[in-house]
Image (cartoon, rainbow, N blue to C red; front, side):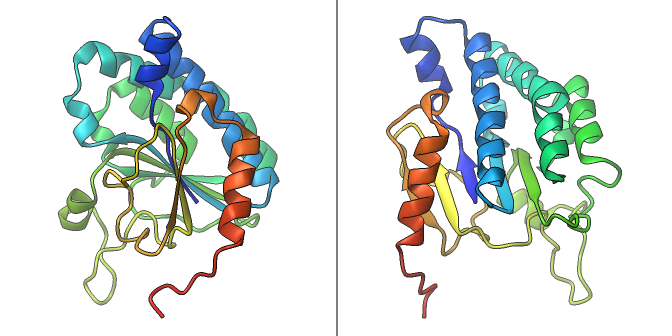
Length: 216
């Protein structure tokens, strides 16, 4: 399952709160939703934290994003990961983000993060965090390991079945395009800060009713 959390800037303006607070609340909601997904039996969750193109945003805005996502890695996610036995993988180029955020991400993912996906844990649960991610860059980067056939070994190897996007958008915005070729895209007009576990459950139920032909 994939999550594209969109709409925090609009949510902050609408509620007249500083952007930094809006992003902190978004990360709190993200940790809550990820926990709820694992409780419901979802095994692999991929979250679009930051695209490579997002790095072109104003410095003040990026500072709010980096601080919130560092807080996510240092304080919000560890209890969820421990409760569910989740392995974390960082996908993208974390070298492009500030050192503090990069270190927090490294502590969360453990040794070898970014060098190809490590073995899945016994629980089978995985959390992929996309940070400074760009699919084209992953394919052509010398940092991407190659298999015996010479093809790149992608950081996310499994296909994505369902992608949830908030904020009313109906596009992937570069989110795991190879892995999402046959994914069902479920969009919400809700802004991400307002998304609830009940909304996620409704999206999962709608997905379960679809027949998946995958090109057949």
